[in-house]
Image 1: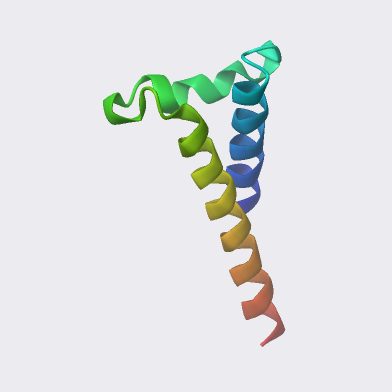
Image 2: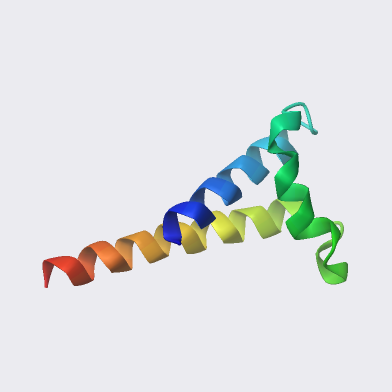
Length: 66
């Protein structure tokens, strides 16, 4: 789950920073276009997804070593 969130968040950030140039990452628009309060805050939402995915991976890695 963490890897999926990290990939979707990173792809969304890349798409937002290039102003939609990477059309293959269009699947990330479903996350932000259909949620009303995220419209206009797409970059922020994708950054949060990427950070959340990274945090989940770090927590899973740390708990597997314990």
